[in-house]
Image (cartoon, rainbow, N blue to C red):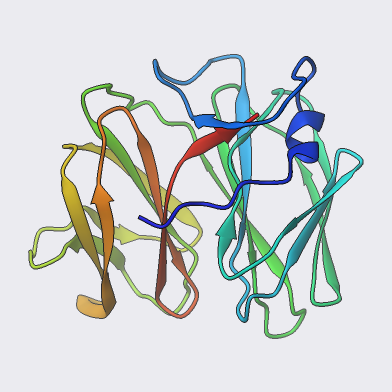
Length: 221
């Protein structure tokens, strides 16, 4: 599975009141905390266009092709305000968080404005230390009835995930390759997720152009 790119440490630390150093750690080992929320950013812009996020008085760049930050702990009830900037365009950020919520903000290309964002929220309740947790995020308007199934099989893991939404489920910790299905037809090549591990969380993103990106979810401190 393709690993995610860590954020520069400054913004991660800016969200935390007592952390002196920053490091990547597993998202959680015993289940989600009820008194925290988490936010991450995805650069889904084509052509390796860098994405800059200005928030919490810190500027952080997500460069490279299709890069993803780790989850940042944020305090529920407080607003995150700032901007996302890329290719000379800017879009504002202003959102709040509920306890136990995981929020993914995705920067997407826009034919008119050049830059757009979509926010996808989830409050997982499926944590099982004996299973792997897999999510499928859909941001591709061209893929109708977006589904994901194991390579070489007809049974879907996720079925008809609507645009701008996510489905998550617990699955057995096995080696897994997946196939994207749009309008009941295979789209693109299979994606090898590698050997899934019990107690870990994984995300597969469907990006514009029927592109799949897979990461292991983690927390940035």
